Each structure stands twice: as structure tokens, then as C-alpha cells.
Image (cartoon, rainbow, N blue to C red; front, side, top):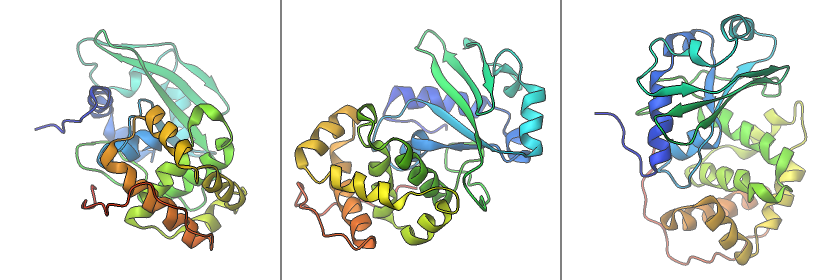
Length: 252
């Protein structure tokens, strides 16, 4: 039986992912990434609609993509499911931007980013219910550290990257090690500290959680994850709005 998700939008994303040419993506190490991957493989703690993949800068895989893709993303699908439609494709030095529509629903943004900032990219993971290769947890942490550095100050993001890092931290990852990897090419620790201080205010978190449609049962996990990040950076703990200790098993 296919995986069924809480958010109907995530079911549509899964339909798209599972129709892709997994063999081509695996052979070329073109990997599913980003917040939608995190949400769909960690209990759907928030809604995330976009599909993001990464391909390494200067790789043969990037050359193969440039040869394969022309007007739409359709060549990535060996058999196009009934009712699936494709928007026009934009190509530039940063990657490929298109969209995929499932039936009469709103088109889903689908981007393949050219990645040149993550050193020593590890082997992909294949998560339950997702047939395509995806970033492993350590590489996701680096990606999110970089994303937070790029946009933690942008109001429309509602601090999503630091909350995603908090979920990763709740279940455990080596923050100093991943900061060191990211900072080979980019400063991220200073920006992470600033983002953590921005969400100390419980009212800020409440507003963000509503904007991001974060599930109520995930809120205490995120708060504990934020304090885990703060602890790893030698920062003082913030007050947690949820006193109850969450009881949840690792969702992936």
C-alpha cells in the first residue's frame, strides 16, 4: 500500500515523486531535499508544498540534466500518469524551475538546484514511501544551516529553517560537525545564533507555528530542539511554552 499523508498536498507530492525516473535520479545522484522531505519523513510536523532536488555543480549529472530537459520536466517521468500536467521550464546557472500539476489541483513548484556549497555530500537515503534518492539527515542539516543563513531575516519564511533544524536536533545530530562542514564555504553559526534569538519570544513562535501549519503535537518537540541547538552553541536555554514532555518515537 502506498504511504498516506495527513496533508492532501503531501499525497500529491508523493504521487509526483513516485512517478519520477528513480533509476536515472539514483545513477546521477540527483536527490530530493528541503523542508518537504523533512516534513514528509518526520511525522508531517508542518505543511510544505514545494519539491526541491539538488544536483552537484560541475558534475556529469548536471550535464545529463541539461541534455535531457528542454521545455518541461516531463522527460524525468518514464510514464506520465493520467491527468499530470507540466508548466514551462526555466533554466539558468542556478538550476531548473518548473511545476507539476496533479489533476485539477494547484500546480506544485518543482525545482532542481545546482548545489556547490555542501562539501563531501554523502550517499542518499531511501525513505519509507519515497522511491527516489534523498539527502541523508546529516546533509539535510547542512542544507538547512545554509538556508537559514540565506533567509532567517526574511519575514515570509516565518523562521522555518531554524524550526526544521530544531526537529533534526530533537532526534539528534552533531551540530558542531555540520556547522564545520557548512562553513568550508559559508558562514552559518552567527546566523543560526541570530535566528535562535529571534524565536525566544513565545508570541513569535506562536505566530510562526500558525503560519507554517505546524502540528500542535510537534510544538513541544520543536521547543526542546531549539534548546538543544542553543545548548550545543553554549547559549542560555529559553523558556518553553509547553511544559509537557512529548512522548513520541523517532518518526523516520
